[in-house]
Length: 205
Length: 432
Image 1 (spheres, one colour):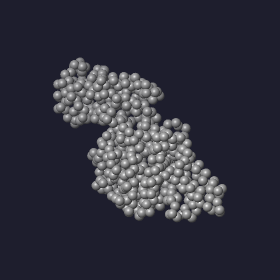
Image 2 (cartoon, rainbow over the protein chains, first blue to last red):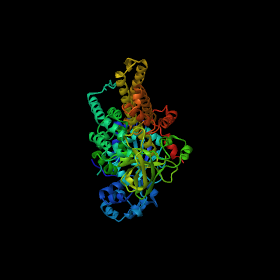
Image 3 (spheres, helix red, strand yellow):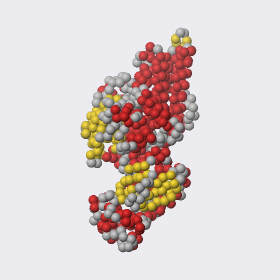
Image 4 (cartoon, chains in turn green, yellow):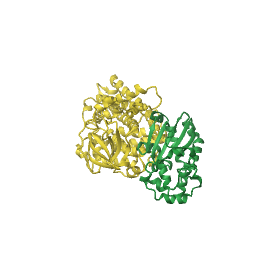
């Protein structure tokens, strides 16, 4: 079944795919290390989020963040983006599950990139001996000591997730920035390759 | 000349080998002899045999053998690729090299570039016969040191001075300025260059990028083709870049860690290719000498009856056989890591050994072949004279054997015990 990227559904699907893949289990048997993927929102993201379904996906990811962590967005571009949509990140005032996404999607058309420059969403993936133990949305400042960091704009992540380009091509070409223990990464390229193949195999709406 | 192949080739492989050999014998070698005797300027004219042969190679699809089938290439095993390279090297080292450098920009773009560059440049290269690539590494102030820099001490590399070709980002374009030296194989006949350039403002050639420059771009100028001792069947010449603008997606490998990995791994691929070309050249020289020694009467008996000749012929045979076996093994490992698994963690020291060893024996075998021919070997009447010149050129082109050995030696000293590709030599360049 096709899912929206980014969305809670997509996260669940990825977790399921990786943890049920025998080949990944084998090639990543010795892998120990987490990834912090930073998806910076670009003009393509703002355009995509004018689609209610896609915006609902994005909000469903945000909704996975425990409410006590919402304060981490205070004064940041993400807060500015949400406030442009009329969403106040106050657990007492908003229920992300009950928003009218059709109305919000219409408001997205009025959001300019320069107003929300730097807004991003962080995905933390904890890989351990052939398993994806955890996949969650990290708030700003969280999981900063992840073994690897993969940073890039939404439009590039979309190519990766949609299978239009593979991770190595995007990293080698400088479209995605990879930071971390590169020696370890190179020794485990088969695991990285398999993971990105699995990610790209999820049908995207 | 037929020979026992220890690989015990399948029927399909035998068919491939026979087909490529026939092409090498009937088309490639005669054209290579013709080109070898032509002045450099004539070799690059539109009616030159160079273009006729390259067009035929493209028609046969030889340029597509490193490209994955799902990207428009031809499905091949590493052994099959080795067979093609050896047979073409047997026919002409120059044409084999021309095919090799033609592949570099476009194969690199297929493996590491995005969809846009694939559509813009690779698709036409796959489909047309008038695209020809070259590999722009060597510079007036940087030759084989370009290949060793990444493993050298930082201070030594900085003393080497800045690169002669610089790339500077300007908006969504890159601007290329500088000069590649006269030894760029195929440059005078190429339409596109896979170019290594230092990023402007950086300290050394290690801080570079790899891009494709269409050679009809504004600001590109070609020098006169060089008159060389050997490999005259693949024209060489300078390339000048005067503020040449290329779109960002023509930068296949951006500056940073992966540029180091790319250089290492690309050299693994080229080392295996040059290794197989060298085996082909060595075999060609050996076979000529064997044939001649069987027929030529000296002292009342055929040369082969003389013990010193017999000994020499055996040693030549031994060298060709050992080189072929090692080159094939190194190619199998290298191609699996880069072309099949895409993990890009082939072993530099093993791939370099394939190139270095095969180059060395090619020269030794060609030298011995010429010696067996005696004074005839020095005349243009027999092809061993050309083989000898080509084998001599091989000791310098695509990296001198000395520098390649030093670079491989560093890898051996640092990493011999490791059963994986270690990138410590690249990481240290990123440390501040």
